[in-house]
Structures are given as C-alpha cells and as structure tokens.
Image 1: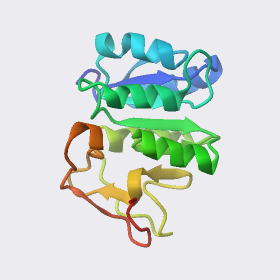
Image 2: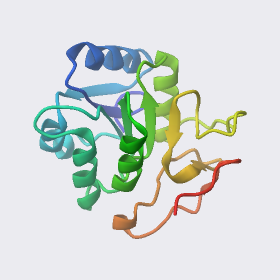
Image 3: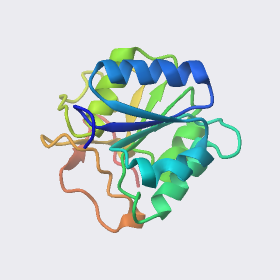
Length: 179
C-alpha cells in the first residue's frame, strides 16, 4: 500500500473533476494517480498497482463500464475495488453491477463522502448500515449487490469471474441481494 492510506487511480475525462478528487484524497493521506479515460486506465493499472480505482462512466476512447469489464476479466485486477463516480442512470447502475462495479457515488458529491467511500473500499473504515435502508455509506452511494462489508471493512465483492464470494459480506437491511 502506498501513501499513508493507499494508492488510488482516479479516472475521469474532466480535468477539473480529476483534480477535485485528487486533491481531496491527497489531503486525507492517499497517493493519487490520474488517467483521462478507460483506455489510459488499462494502460497504467499494472504499473501503478492501485488499491482502489474510481471511474467516470462517459469518457472518450473507452467508457468506465467497459473498463470495469476488462479489469474484471484480468486475473491480476479482478478483485481490485472499483467505484463509479458519475451521474449514473438506473440502467448504468444495473450495467455497472453486472460488470463488477463495487460501489457508485453520484455526482455532484460531498468530498467527505468520496473520502469515506474510498476508505471503505480500501478496507480502512467501518460504517454501520445506513439508517435509511439504502445501500452503503451515505446519500448517493450504492454498494454491489445489496451487500455491505462486515467488521473487516473490505469491499471485495467476490466477482464471479474471480471464482468465490467474500464470506465477510452480509445483506444490507431492507435491500434484497442481487440475483
């Protein structure tokens, strides 16, 4: 793990958003590497070896959901925690879950919410289930398959392509697990 809290690969075609995410994560002790689209993400991921990846959905060359599908197909990256940070439609959320996205954060977002999400994906923060019966860490945050991590805090969704589910996952109250 690099940086005080780990290394994050931030992927967004909007330079301002990339910088906003980078600065907020660096202020919290993360080392941040950036990429401008999904193709660049795939070019640098093995060299950078991030602990977490954040991706936008709509980007040139290769969109975020296609990048996630390729990450999940690669045994070296199939368990790497990935969050989509985007203004997603319901269809994009469903496609993302099917592709293996671990969490979604809606734009616009509060910087503290982004930091909390990345910490949880990196296995550094345990939050109790949300009071509103929703998925995960806060407003606009959805975690994969209606599950949230147990006391270990690690969001390893056990993607089917990787072969096994993580026994630390338990259902979020009020939400059925994905089928």
